[in-house]
Image (cartoon, rainbow, N blue to C red; front, side, top):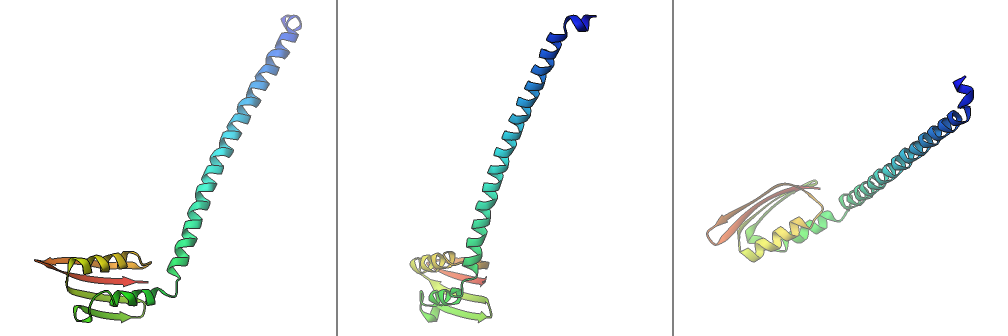
Length: 133
């Protein structure tokens, strides 16, 4: 009996509840799509960085660029051993300017540095350097 008396009000209440649940569902879906979009943008940005690094590492001229390292200091201060794609170099009695040139050149190359030791001897520096590309 009560159902027949308040039938219209129950129908309106159920309609409002369905409307609220639909609005909440839509909000959740929109927020999830925005989150997925930001995650996708981040992944694309990382992928582009990986491609750029891969192009740098695949550069055929890295060996030639390493040869420039030979010219930064006199050959009397340098021991150079190159085997395949591995380089071992030892610099002895470098001044601070020569050390800065060598380290700057090394750090600007797209190589994998395995060893970089710098030892100070009163007024000069000794550098041991091993890399792979």
